Length: 244
Ligand code: MGP
Image 1: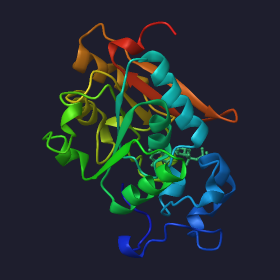
Image 2: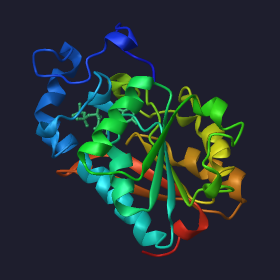
Image 3: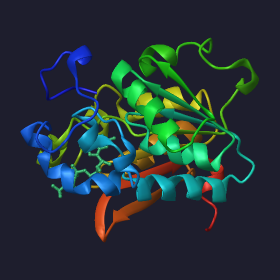
Image 4: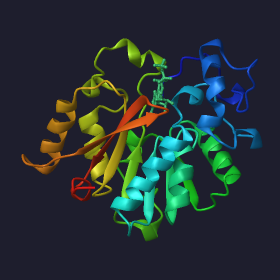
C-alpha cells in the first residue's frame, strides 16, 4: 500500500489518539467504534490503516455471506490483511484464516487485533503477494493444494481514489484487476475483492470472461454502512452466481 505519510515504518505509532493522528486522518476518529467495536480494548492501527481498514459490520457481513454460500469451507486467505478487520471476522466464522500483508506493521496490527477479539485460529505471512503468488512454500502443508476462499481488499491509492469519477481497475496499483484475479485463482476456486464504489462493472465482466469463459458471471454486492455505500464486493466463482 503506498503511504501518504512520510514516517519510517519502525517509527510509526500503532496506537493513536485524536491528537496523534495525522491531520488527514482525524476525520476517521469519529468512526473508531464502527471500525472496531472493541476499539477501547486497545486496537492497533497505523495512520494509513485508519482510512483503509474494513469497518467491522462490513467485514462481518462479508464473512457471513461467504459462510452462507460456502458452508463447508474451512480455510480462508486474506490478502492485504491490513489492520485485520476482515481477518478477525473470517477467523470467527471459519476454522482457519491466513493473513498476508507486505508491511510488517500491518501484520503486527492484524495479529494484535485478532488476539483482542479472541481470534486464535489465524496465521500470518509478511510478504508481497506479487512474489508470494509465484510459489506455495509459504502455505501450511495441510491447506495445499487450495484455499476454500480467498479475500482481498487491495490498495485503492488512499483517500484520493475519490478524485477519479470512475475508478479504473485496470490501472489499480500494485495489483491490476486481471493480474490480481489470475494470481488468486491459482490458489482457489472462489474469491472476493473489496473494491471502490464508483467503478466500471464491464471491467469486472471482462475479467470474468477471460478467467472462466464467455458465459461466466460474477456477483457484485453493494456494501452499505448506515445507508452510505462504502464499496463493492465482487465475488468470483461458480458457487456465487446461484440465486441467494
Ligand atoms: P472512504 O471512501 O475514504 O470514506 O472509505 P467515506 O467516509 O466513504 O468517504 P466520504 O469522504 O465520501 O465520506 C470508505 C471505506 O472504504 C473505508 O472504511 C475502507 O473500508 C475503504 N477504503 C478506503 N480507502 C481509501 C481504501 C483503500 O485504499 N483500500 C481499501 N482496500 N479500502 C479502502
